[in-house]
Image (cartoon, rainbow, N blue to C red; front, top):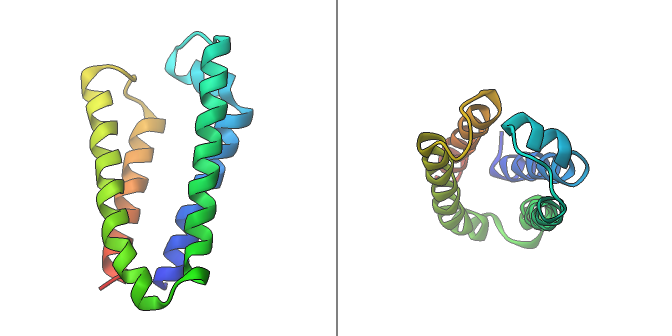
Length: 122
């Protein structure tokens, strides 16, 4: 497994999240026990596009940079991904989102990618 592959796999996961947020807003909200409102759908669509843009950057970044530049970029991206994990854990522990398979598997998957990014960027 190469650093390029890790970037592309991470981007693929981002595309899946974007699609689920864009087309499955009702299902995602129901899994958390939230009422679906028009503003929630609007926000989910906006966030889905943000995920989409970020996923495309992750998929394409290896094509746009050299291996050394990619390794340098990885340090910052690891930090950002760690902050996202901290936020997810905070939301779980504060009760903002219910504990369950989806949020926990998301945290575990993020941690796996953090480890892979670190390992392959050394």
